[in-house]
Image 1 (tube, rainbow, N blue to C red):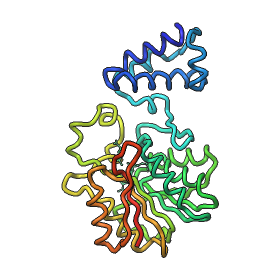
Image 2: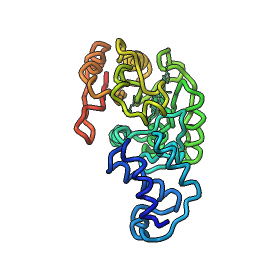
Image 3: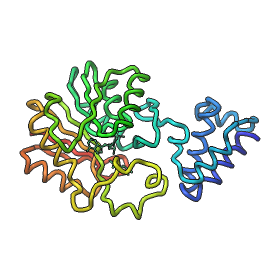
Image 4: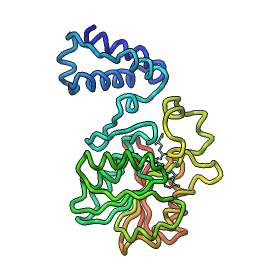
Length: 276
Ligand code: SAM
Ligand code: GLN
């Protein structure tokens, strides 16, 4: 089978779920991974014969909706390769935007806390991007922390990972210049509109909050931040696109006088910055 044919096979299996464009990139990801090519090498070798021993299994898993990142066991984030598996959320492009915004404004040697670290994506990327930073990251899931620890080690950065509940008092972790969180924020009732690949395969503890308390994690983190943020320190959130105003007014009620809402590359309000 040629590369062209292999891509066609994968695309056919995934188009019903992802649509043609995304199915094409899923197919390319798989073939690049298995052949060790980058995208331009792939295009240059389209008519070459290729043998992917586990192609049948891969195609079947993709057809059932298993995200390609779980199938391959890896995801790209901020130009780094992260190990991922069913126990952690697949890091998203909008979260990369959050990281780059924070990195641009963080001072050298900043002490940074990442709440709900999952694969460790935010914590590890910031540890790489912010010179001499000291990064602490928490999650309630031991499974996630194990993956995050392996990611930090493989990517050669030091992050202190702690098993802790974001809804409790975190002040024992000390004080920080930057506190960041991409917490669970999708209202439970949105589940009916979400894609099968997310709902059936990604951890629900990473995604959902009760409809009647969608600010739960933001409120708890704001409370911790009032005790844990140093003078002039920044609080950064990734948010549910419809919750921007609610998050900002909750922050103002808690004494954060400066709040700013940022849009992502798709022009959706997805990031909040705040300072007391
Ligand atoms: N930071 C990662 C990222 O941006 O890709 C993962 C974000 S995911 C949306 C939310 C994370 O919060 C999950 O890893 C989940 O395990 C964690 N989490 C959920 N409830 C928590 C709690 N009560 N305390 C601490 N972490 C929690
Ligand atoms: N942005 C993710 C999604 O839409 C959810 C991340 C989160 O809940 N923090 O699936």
